[in-house]
Length: 201
Image (cartoon, rainbow, N blue to C red):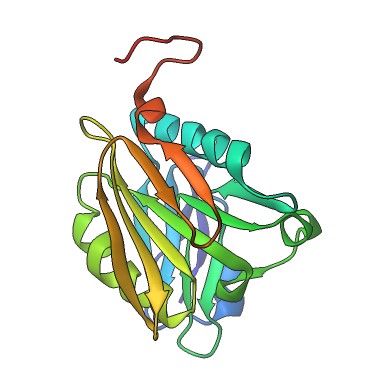
């Protein structure tokens, strides 16, 4: 069972007692305090990102939009259906890159729409991001998957899809250059700079 009950003037979601369908997930009550995802029908909730995590996401989308080819854009926290068949899997990567046409249509997005998925590590997400989501994004056919650690100096692990599995092509700091999924050059250190400042934090 899933639904919303009113308690003390607040809407409180009752937790499902079964594997959810995509239709059930789509009608979940709005909750701005948590991020909801589906892992093979199992509803999962994580707290909303803390400020430094959100800043890293904002700065990364800006950096990507400066170097992406025409017709492509980056989006923060877009809901992506990885597996539509029951039991479904729905993830919300911290950043995705897709065509501007698909991003502007305002319709449900799927793994095949995504050229690049990025996860920014947070306390408690390392295992999921490094193992579970790596497998899910590969199975969905997403060509590139980046894992960004901004705890100290920004460090990136970049993977590209080769024969259905991700192959690591970069693991480090500084300037990252790649040809997949596009010709990109990203200075990772800009992710920790204060806006409008030339000095590193």
